[in-house]
Image 1 (tube, one colour):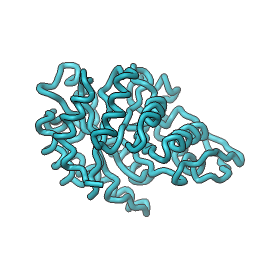
Image 2: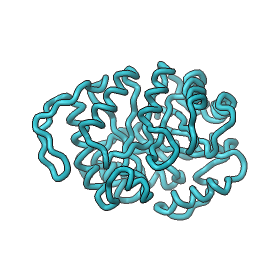
Image 3: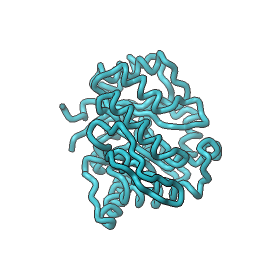
Image 4: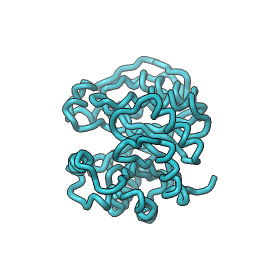
Length: 300
């Protein structure tokens, strides 16, 4: 397998100086990619704006959304927005999509009720692919209607490998039916292996195949004991997957390499490392993570 390792900023505030240091540091230290999550109701910056800024600062690292909410967005406009970013970054965009967070505030922000999200997503994603293919789209569906609409520019490579997040049984089945890859989050290595198999089984049942290189995970890590705020967040995130030993999900930096090796044994090869708390010095943080994790990355 080809192992690639990128990073994401910690949750919460990310200013221009921190973002600049992170993006440039990732490029300098040999990381593969920068990933940004989405939470409309929090302080975090908009992922497309962040990645556009990062694209202007870098020339090599890939730029990913981990993950971006689709329900609540017009497919035609989202297709144009992401294709535009891909063109400006010279083909470095890696989109990963999801239904959106379960928080009521997020559903208010996107104007979508929780029970509507899956239906909207399943109509919208094929439309995004059709718009990126460059043809005139005719579609009369329950949510969206297009009569010969064509969206330009196209992505640099003519389309995207679209990854999806999610860990529930329904999300894993949907990922197998619709996506080109799976990006897990806050999972144990054993759960990651079960999820990968479930996605592959769902893809096979739909007459599809997902490349074995297209399985990865967002891996949060800590320095020392789990902070109280992070422990509370961990408990919220784990409500869907069930209880787990925090050390089996959120490794200490000293144990990060061993944790990644277990995920690789589970069949995953693409990783997004995310500090639980924002570092005071991104240059020092990236140097430490480089030493801890990048020996596992496949040489280019």
